[in-house]
Length: 291
Length: 85
Image (cartoon, rainbow over all chains, first blue to last red; front, side, top):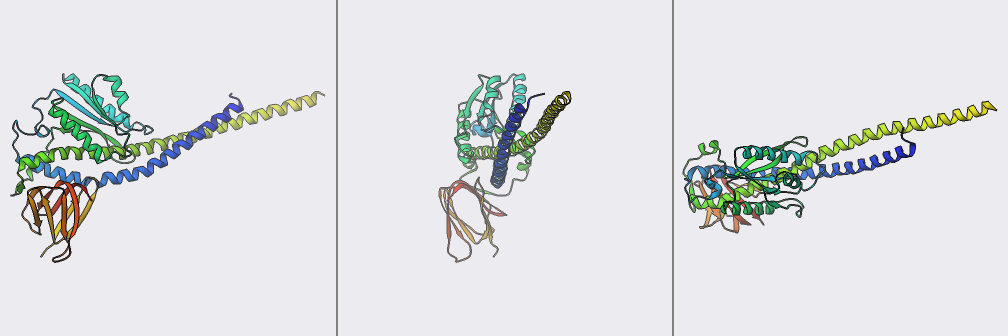
């Protein structure tokens, strides 16, 4: 059995760990509420944008002059996986789950003989992807400088992606992020962002005489990059909320585990102390009797 | 006369959702005023001031918007702007 001093130190160290996890849990809980509100506030814009895009896309015919954001490059060889992860750890399996989802997709695409490239957003996913696909990372977009990834970051990423598709660096882009369901559940999600995926439902409800000013093509040309930005922005916000949710849950578990560990260590400590006292007493009594 | 339902949305949040009398929208090809029951229109907008008349003959309120577009449909006017100030 470990000696008393060792046990005492161990209990002390677990206690200080517990303090850290508890603090992180509280920070995450506070941030979660803000992030969740931001994600919800962004929804009307995204929904409206999607509706308008659906209406427009159904009215415009796709030819070789169409924007690559809408029509793609006409090929389907090189896939770009845009993987959005967080900048900080201490959030359980959150980042690992997103990366895992991306890897599954990457393997599936590679099996079909496609080329796979990565565009990493956020710090945490980078080393894992780098280890497995060392030469396939096109770019890493660092969001750690910004306190909360916002619209400016989304805009920069969208501009990057647009430039890359114009240079035909890739044909299809998929976006990976953690969709926020609740503080307990975050769902790694894949979404095709380039070329834009138009749902059939949106097309059906279009119609009616709408005046376009300037014409459909020009509006669409203006709207496409904006739509991409909006989708990226939405993903960043969802990611942010998910990260805090995951962090809160993970830290809650860690705090509870530390509590359990402290309890069991304290029992062991008390037992050994008692045993030491008993041994000492027996020695004294035995000594006294021997006299 | 029924009022125009007007919504101003930015990526960050829903800025305004009101029933107003008229809104003057700075379209790329010229300003246009939108009253209730306006014909469906979609237009991109310039970086300029949006002028909102809460009631007929009332004093206007301006909000300056940057980048975006306006859509008028049977539900009213929706402006999607990248930033407002």
